[in-house]
Image (cartoon, rainbow, N blue to C red; front, side, top):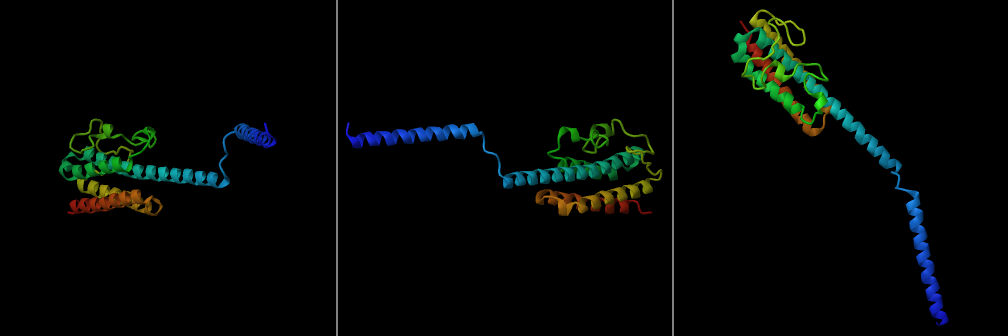
Length: 201
C-alpha cells in the first residue's frame, strides 16, 4: 500500500472514531433539558389554563344557582309552570353549554354543592321535579315568597344577578368563551325583564 493510501485510511479511521465518541457522549448526557424560555412558556400556559378552568367553574356555578331558584319557584308555585318552565329550560341549556369540558368531579351536586338536574327535574323543564324541594324553600335553603308575583320578582332578581356575574367575567374570558358568556348574560337580562313583566299587578 502506498504512503498516500495509508494516510487516507488513517484519516478515515480517526473520523469514524471521533463520530462514535461524539455519539456516546450525547447518549450519556441524557435527554435535552428545556431552556429557560421554554420553561417560562410552559408555566404561563399552565397559569392560563388554570385561570380559564376557574372562570368556567364560576360561570357554571352562577347558572346552576339560578337553575336551583327556578326549580324552587316551580316547586313552590306549580301554577307558574306555563310561564316559568320555558325559561328554566333555557337556563338548563346554559348550564350545559357553559360546563362543556368540565371534569366529572365538577358535575352538579358534587364540587359546587348544588342540586343536580336529576334531583330537581328534567333539563327540558317539561317534567315535574322528581325530588323537588318542599314548597316555600329553595334548593339552597332560601325561602321562596308565598305570593306568586313576589316569587316571580325574586326569580327576576336571581336572573339579573346571574347575568351580572357573567358580564363581569367577559374581559378575563378567552374570546370564544366570552362570546358564550355574553349570549348567556343577555338571555338572563331578557329573562329578568319577562319575569318582572309577569309579576306586575
